[in-house]
Length: 180
Image (cartoon, rainbow, N blue to C red; front, side):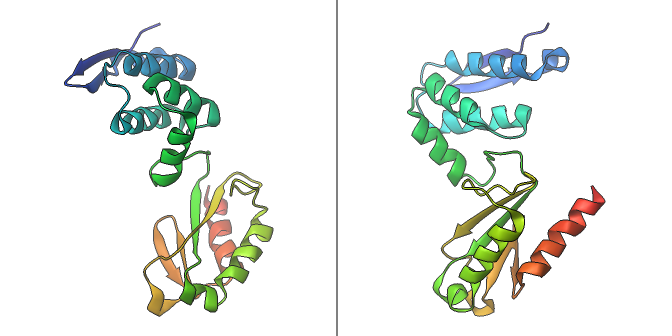
């Protein structure tokens, strides 16, 4: 099996992905961890973020074991890596396809978004981590989507929608499921 060659220049990791084609996921992940472990200043958040992005590129998402190992490699506590995964929109902690964000700001809440959130959780079968029972949808909240004049607001995969009800949202997500 080929190994990924990594070169560290000025604390930046350059990975030669030539040998990566014949490797399985576990081998690819191990090699990525090894490259980052060799860095002298691995304990910077930028390095941790880049490591998490590389891992996600291979796996498609970042699970709890990957978070723990990434934290260990870079010298951070796992809670720091978990927080980074939650705060960076480009990082995913589960293999979901769609991200639905419900605005819980004052205007949206006054116009019923808290009720919409409850209905969506029930309709989608969302667990405590915000993942739907079919693992396709991640449901979360944000204090404000900055579209208050059009409240109530919801964001699906980065696009803000106003005035939708639960059935309209579920229909949009179901239509996508039929196309797949």
